[in-house]
Structures are given as structure tokens and as C-alpha cells.
Image (cartoon, rainbow, N blue to C red; front, side):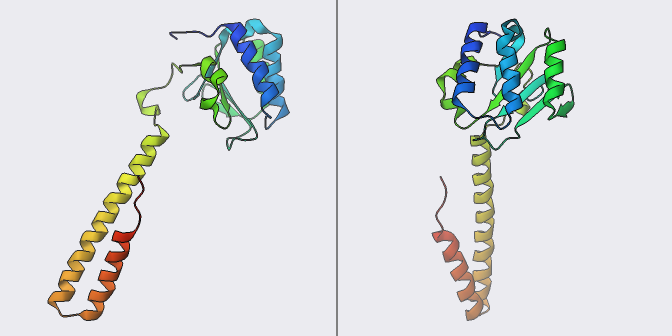
Length: 186
């Protein structure tokens, strides 16, 4: 299923570091992580992933510096923000894999986090959309839209010249000039 499994001792070290370093949006999330620390054998089936999409059983825990919800527990296709349900499920089903996504600012710049993150085996190619791709796509769409507007303005300017309509000509050339002088994002 997974090519590399992070050793339990490294998960313990990371969880302790995480709880010492970051403030969680909900204290109950810290309780769940502390429960896992007290039952280290449970960490054998715990996997930290960067994205819990499609995971059959998962937690999403956010810090105060994140814009994500404070806590979510996923079991099959059911999502809840109940810490109690998550705790009892973890307690009564220790053999089931549990995937945890920690949402906090600049997580990918944290070497300790990068070290313990494992691959989500349930992600498909369609699920993986990088933010940079979204930004590029948005810029491309904006460029296409601007090009279409420029072409429409040029046609309108030509018609205004053909009809000797000075007012329309001035208005359209001003709009065209404004669009062409606008800074482009790179």
C-alpha cells in the first residue's frame, strides 16, 4: 500500500514537537493527539498525509494560523466535527488505518513535518490539483478574455473610422489603450 512507513518513534517526536510549537483551534484536538502519544502502539496505523482526500478514515486538525475548520473526522463518506465520535472510533478500532492532515501555516517549510508526511494512497490523479496550476489556469483564462476584448475593440475602432464616428472612435481607443497599458501578471 505505502512505499515507506515512518517509524512510530519519529511520529511520537513530531507530535510532541507539534503540540509544543503550535496552538490548535480546539483543545479537544490536542487531547486526541495526546491520546495517541499515550498509546504509542496505535501510531502503527496512523499516517500523516498532506491531503486526506478519499481516505476512508481521517482527521483534519487545524492550528489557529490556518483558515481550515478546527477539526473534522471522516469515516467512509460521513464527516463530523465531533471530537467524541473521533475519539471513540480511534479507541475502539485501533487496527484501522487513520490518516491525519495537520493544517497550519507554512507546513511544507517545516522539515519535521515534511519528514513524517506519507503518501496518501487514495489520491487519484484527478484529485491532485496544485495551487500553482490553478493560478496559471486563471492567468491564462484572463489573458484569453483580454485578447477577445482587444479584438472586439479593434473591430469597433475600424467601424468607427469607416463611419467617421469620432466620439465612438475616441471612446474605444481610450478603452483599448487602458487595457494594453494594464500590468500583466506573470
